[in-house]
Length: 158
Image (cartoon, rainbow, N blue to C red; front, side, top):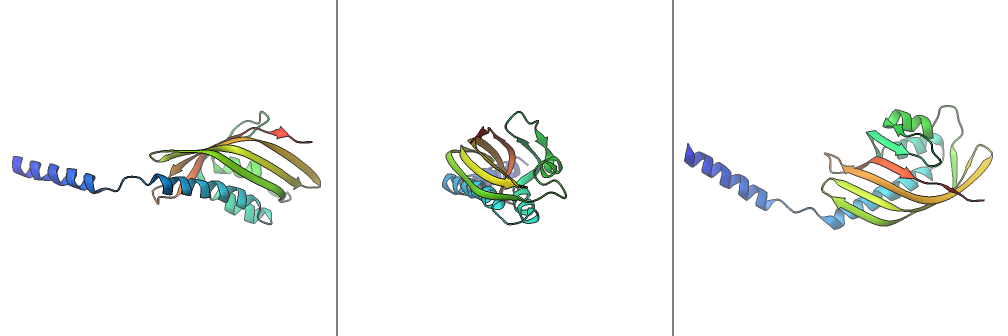
């Protein structure tokens, strides 16, 4: 019995030693791609296309914390209702740029932070803002990253 336990322990240690260490560069590239996919999703034409592309990047339990004192939106249903309310016009993006200045990976959590600039039309009104943003992502069982938390502040541009 002791011999069986010893052999089992040795096999577990050997298996752990053979596991590839996390590839930080690949994780950082994947998080950068997630950040860009968020921006690109908003640039699509039509509310349905934007909804599908943007919401696919979030976990079901994600939370967004919009600027200007807007209360947090928790879960994809609340986030979707906030960004894509039914029977409303699509957001027409004029300029949307994210400039990440920091990407940190710790295990299955990644944090992207940076500066953004956004100009868009909603209905017949044009809006412009810029500010800081922080996105927290979690690696999923399929090894893809999804947004779990997002916060930004808005400096309204005139």
